[in-house]
Image (cartoon, rainbow, N blue to C red; front, top):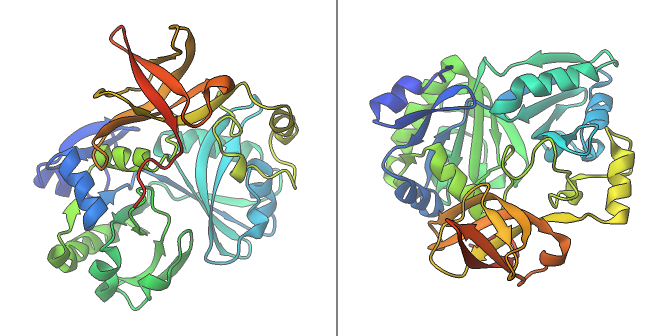
Length: 360
């Protein structure tokens, strides 16, 4: 089990620690609902140092990224970030990821913790272009500082104008006394805020200064359990739940990151799928009775026929109702369609809704 550079701090704070993607990670501190509320209304800090970072450099770095990712990275300018995915050859997804353009001929790829080795091998296998690849995952830490008070709570720690960093943009600057820190606005919570990338031996200083200056704004440490409820309220996909090696980006509603103005892995087949139409789609749904849907629960129609499966579900703290995502047959995917979630042999009514579930 790997630790992050901050594991000793989480343990000292009394966090409930559990294995996640091979790491010993804080799941909760004071409780999911309280932590969720802190991020929605004030500011909270997640240690997400388990995420993977690959640096791709050289004249063909962009060409390699274009070959293995579905989105069009040629549109990126310095300081921009793009959400994308790595399609496989069978119509599924190796992983979803973020592509950061540092400068011409230098890009940072941020991948899911559980897929670091798989992604590295996949991209390396396609690297016949002489691109220099560095796996920085074990050397770098990542804090996600999320919430509507993030700008006020952090501004005194940097000369970078935080309010000017737009969504899916980043700056490289001095933060909490540490130089060359990536300050990024690519949050996974829908609450605003920043991601801070730094070296492992720098992160404790940053953590301490963030909590010192953030104290007046009600800052709290937040575990991965609340991260999951926050992202689900926004309808953001989680790899391993809502997307995986067998789900296509078209089925998952990720056509907007699947650009056919270039060739990439399996692009011909995905283009045909888009043109022909899919047989199942990822939908969002709200429970119509007090009930909590869970991953792998069966979705049925009014006659009890199986029409799909739940991929993510929770009792949404901000909405006080059960919500979920899942794949259903296209005939049952229209907004306002009535579906049923089979919970302990009882078919509980639900309604297909437009995501995000939470609108601030």
